[in-house]
Length: 529
Image (cartoon, rainbow, N blue to C red; front, side, top):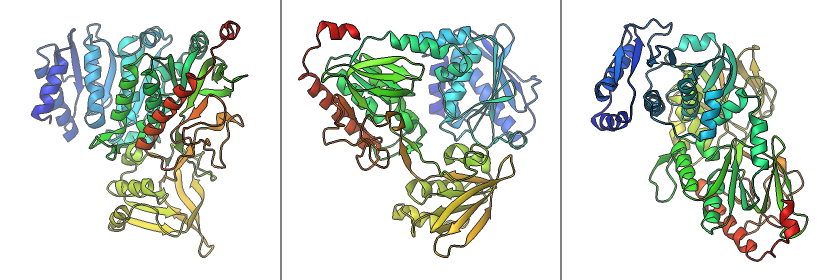
């Protein structure tokens, strides 16, 4: 199951296991159970006797296995054969169970250990989902460090009947004590913030106590990370405020057009960005969302950024790099059936629609790529494009049209997502050429119609165009003294990772150029901060 190179790497990792524990498997006669048995025995063989395997488990889900430590309590269970994107999650769980320290901030680990209450989590994931590992790893770690937490990781494709019964139509999906708790990507800190009612207040107090920055970067994607690195290399005090480092890059599967990097994945690039930022003395503040921008009262004065929770950070220069998010259809039924048939990530949720009929909305590169990917999984794909022709690259369009289970509809205006109150059952659309309205019977709708900038929180403080993009000049200046902007949230054309990174570097250099020309703050002004 694991080739020689992967076994060698696994054996090297397992050398970090300090404390012995058991893997208790519950198996049946399925092919997946045979794969799981082989995987577990391989792990045991490579662990130098520190990990043992038993096959007398009595769990309800078969196949599955629990990690059981000295106290005999199985806090963490995998109802899966955790390969693909989840192989790393498995390796980390083994290391943590064996006493190897996790790479989490000390304050986050302390919060995880002290989380009160009893929590029984069920995490539905897909082995092809690149958004799932963050949630899987976060709740695996929580179960390992906190005896009041139990976590079960469930492969939706392996337990398809259960997925249908519980109406799971998007991953990652987290149930807590039998009730839906969270959907979508999240870090441990973000999940703890939802679980711990006092977390936001503590975070706000910690942020409010921060000393002012020379440069504060708002946003952690390629533009924000590049800005933070370039600013920090100038030897000034730099802060980076973001919900997550990497931004939307985390949600990108394959990246093959970044110069000097033949190919990588979004999560790998996001991790590299974070590691690069943390090499310098950048104060990284994640899990926080900016809520308001307060321009300086006078040129060279303090600019304020208020975050949710009420704390205000101050800086002499601010770089806005808040990126963009997937655009919604904004038609009846979309919000009601989100994660119940309406999806935005074909790589994550596609396997849940195996053998079903789906639609893809959008004829650009993202939409056509999504339709091609889904065609290999689902029964039939209908792609709807509003314009007269598809806007994707010719090579993608040619590939799409060669697939026998794909129908392309151009001049198609989506009017409504239909459902039965529980899940999607169809789509109503209008033929813009004839004006006729038609209905498609289907089980899933994948929305791929471009991006909308994350700039609403700015209000009228910073000039924006009719699309919500921040208007900037060639040096990334916004027109508001001390405030610069970079990346997908701006008017710069071509929303590409390499463009965003370059713009972030440019913004940091421009910010430093302005800083060295600013008058020194008077003692009374500095004391205000």
